[in-house]
Amino acid sequence: MESRPFPRTPFSASVVGLGTWQLGADWGDVSESDARGVLEASAEAGVTFFDTADVYGDGRSEQIVGRFVADHADAGLTVATKMGRRDEQVPENYVEPRFREWLDRSRRNLGVDTLDLVQLHCPPSAVIDDDATYDVLDRLVADGVITAYGVSVETADQALSAIARPNVASIQIILNAFRMKPLDEVLPAAEAAGVGIIARVPLASGLLSGKYGMDTEFAEDDHRNYNRDGSAFDVGETFSGVDYATGVGAAQEFARLVDSELADVTPAQAALAWACQQPGVTTVIPGARNVDQARSNAAAGSVPELPQSLLDGVADLYDRRIREQVHGRW
Image 1: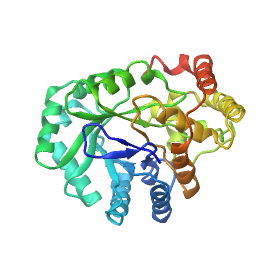
Image 2 (image 1 turned 90 degrees about the vertical axis):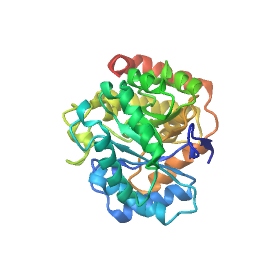
Image 3 (image 1 turned 60 degrees about the vertical axis):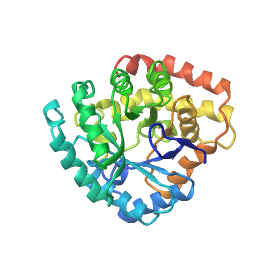
Image 4 (image 1 turned 30 degrees about the horizontal axis):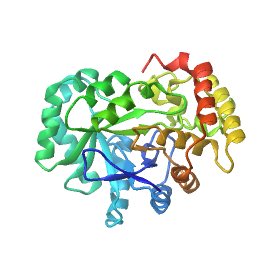
């Protein structure tokens, strides 16, 4: 699989990485043996970039990833984690003592002295806009606590604010065929500034696989069940903020489009290829709950350049069925 230099860091990243939210919680239960299988299959398929967070399973995801990486110390794996959601998300909590407390816990969970990449985990806009935030992060780099830092954001405006900071290495943002606003300004600005883009939710919480219908049932502890209205966290994190019925219909049309344009490429692989082939994207981080999903996702990193006819069809689908619901919200 192709790897790309990760801007402002000594690392590189596979164009398809692995998001590990589902290995901790919020997607239904996943055993540690199954989680380990997903990690092994991903690495064997060429994945070198793993994204986690201190709140995924209250640290369980970090611990599982940390043990896996320790067992593959010579494989050139990079781990990005996130901080800032363990306490109430108010600006007063984004201060140096809290940062150090959160990061000490992540270092223990991951079993390292220096964290590869730490991202603020969708903090309030006031935190992203505050010079003091970056002063603290710069000190943490100087102290050897972290190698580099980035910001995971909800909105394009937040992304543009963070991109303007001289030492921000990455922006993590929702980008997929049902969430195209980052194409307007965020990706061009990041590419011009030399800032990496980590595209999250690239399958719109699985919608773009084309496998879900109106009768699909999700587990009680799966956010696709309990967060459709945004009652637990930003609704944009669940199905990219698209109404489920709208999303199912649009995903079925997307699947038909892929089938008509591509041979031997699944809708999910086409969706991942669409994201990782956008100019300015460093890596995309789909999740996987089993070995087959992990291997299939990784294979998207080898999909040839998508034909313009498919790209035009995806853009038309977005404009007709999705844009009105999401484009102005994030």
